[in-house]
Image (cartoon, rainbow, N blue to C red):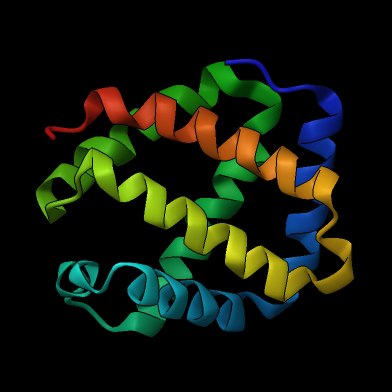
Length: 137
């Protein structure tokens, strides 16, 4: 579970560019997610604006925590355990990751370079590899 300091910096900087448009980014994310896999929509029973704020808060915590992965791991494991109750499955990580990459591409525009994309892919793998063992399916 190794990320380079350069990858961490790229992810943290690019996320700081998305934060000012957090509400719009959350809308883009969920539109993309439900476009990729419409079967996921019933898992979201609450107000999507509230859900979007939770998503962006969780992403910020994860991005900020990249400098201390040992401290981030238990938080991600707890997040995975909570998601079990929502019906989340291991197979959902792929559409979620793809929706996140799409959101970053739209939100960052030209700042979403291949290097930034690859850094995010690495982070997505670290997060999913940490969370999946805690998932039921």
